[in-house]
Image (cartoon, rainbow, N blue to C red; front, side):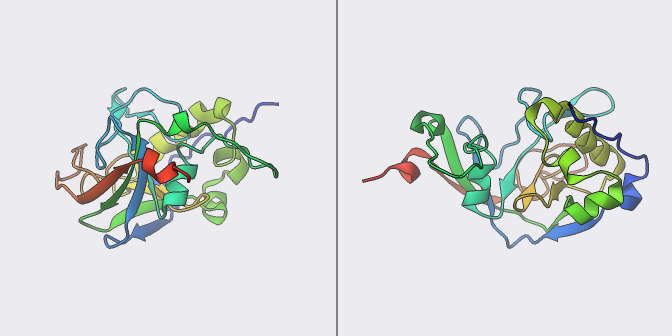
Length: 202
């Protein structure tokens, strides 16, 4: 039976717990090579849990994702659909082509919404309803990303599931060189490598 995700409350700004991503912490990214290390995905293409998303006027909100480690970034992107079940797992190398692994440093601390099990309970939603849903439920989970963006102008992203993640929205002040609303356009330090050399075996 399909999950019915609760509607986001109208007082998220009071309910959402904020945590900080220090500017000294590396942001690890795995991304299509058509994007630079610090470049937002402009939308509206894609089908992720929290992107693409729209503002109140129907305009796309550019997004960017990263993690605390390479493993986190890879598992949330190129290895996202590898099953968790025990046993042998295979993954076609062709799926790694046209992807880069990048490291980005922010130029300021980031304020993120915490989406851990405990924090979600305060928001009136269960982990299974927001973080552990299948892809067919993503349009409903994206409504929460849109609501947090609309109601919490200080929040620049989110964290708290599987491993620390950032994105989407207001990260040009720290993690990208793009310039969405309410963000200065300061470019960060970044470095990136093609994925293929990282996956070659002898």
